[in-house]
Image (cartoon, rainbow, N blue to C red):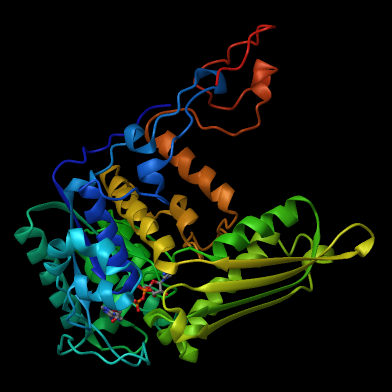
Length: 459
Ligand SMILES: NC(=O)c1ccc[n+]([C@@H]2O[C@H](COP(=O)([O-])OP(=O)(O)OC[C@H]3O[C@@H](n4cnc5c(N)ncnc54)[C@H](O)[C@@H]3O)[C@@H](O)[C@H]2O)c1
């Protein structure tokens, strides 16, 4: 397999974040602490995970960061937009994810990052009122103002490249309409101030138009429609989304594939959450909740392959609730009650009580997406990056393909994509070739070494 040409990860990488609340401030604080050697990057594949290369007996297991050329944390610089003027320091204190003592060593760095005025329209996020926002003659004008911000940020920070990750609020649920079908219709919609274009799509357009890889961390429509996919392909820009897969949904995409793999039936799955951060306040609005509900509920059907197994999964009851409960802050608590059936239809139950910290789970996902999207850009990958579906509740995929939701299959997609980029053998985990070389992996770089009796596996 030939290695792809990948441009080196030289120079500064600017990270632009529309929405500078709990997730953004936790992400930036973590990276700044890591730059000073004051924190460990737990939860981040790019920083910690090792990847197996070649045959099992070769014992080649470099860290992903040693295997693929990723930007160094020391080269990351941050900027963004918000409807509140709070610096990232103030936003972090208000979000209350980390105690002030933990943040103190990077106070200066966090105070220096102040959000630019946002593109915002309250009809898409009903429960928030803007304190700073751009005004313009139409949505195209607003997009052009964002493009100017992007250009200025790049210049004034001496960045070589940029990545944009939407960490803004969840907007009301919206369906695609004619305005989303083609780039031409979408650009006309921007000029006509179409109500079918939410703020997050204006940011996505501005990023892609500026050649900046774009990630959608919320369930918003944002870049998830043909017109922006067309623009991304035309401009050679990678895009990915949507909605970071962090707590309860991550557990769902671990457990549901386990039930299907064992051919156990599912009668019902009741999921509820309490959380008290600003995200929870936004989701208290039924329109924004509907967006979240859509991405949260879509995973089960996909993991269970419902259509193929109507007897096991044709009639299960699935309910997702999110309750805004201020005392809990960012420390979301999720409960799942799962009713499954086994041999002779006998019922069984599983209870999951996940006392998580939302932004602590989300921050390393933002970091990995920044570094992998930058890698994708330097590797010439464009359009939808389905290999990053590992990080999303509702992975964006080609319209004729149903996206993969099983966390471990998604992980295999991700690691095999890295192997392909670097010209390494794809690993299918069948293991057949260790016993009969003729059954080896299609496209294997070389025939596997035969087993010599008595030879022990190396640690
Ligand atoms: N924390 C998690 O585990 C998790 C998981 C999946 C998805 N998400 C999503 O990530 C997003 C951020 O979550 P959070 O906990 O940081 O929320 P948050 O409310 O703390 O931060 C969101 C910020 O976005 C700002 N904002 C809203 N509209 C904006 C606009 N048009 N332009 C610029 N800024 C805007 C808000 O003022 C707020 O400061 C939410 O959409 C959330 O649903 C979070």
